[in-house]
Image 1 (cartoon, rainbow, N blue to C red):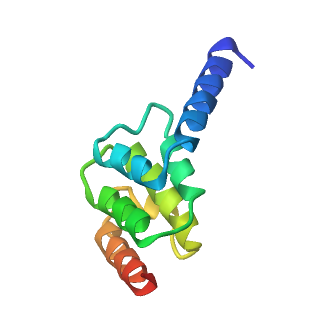
Image 2: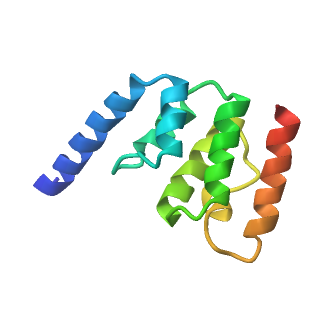
Length: 115
């Protein structure tokens, strides 16, 4: 493994450890403030939490936002994990495809029915 890759993985692991010490509300606040780090690990830390209406709705709001694609992609992956939803792939909820709006509407209905 090259040195840059090891450095990247070490930094991502450090950031994951940092976020693992946050409460659910602290993670949500960081997401709302756009302080999601450089390695997309905040999304996967949220995916480890108990799925609550607050977390799922906040992640859904990110999917509806104009955040960069990779943020939305990793957010979608986390939300699908929380919901144990196999109906979509993360890309189907984050890429600018014609069916994106319909997919997001279906996901929103799923979240509301669950909570």
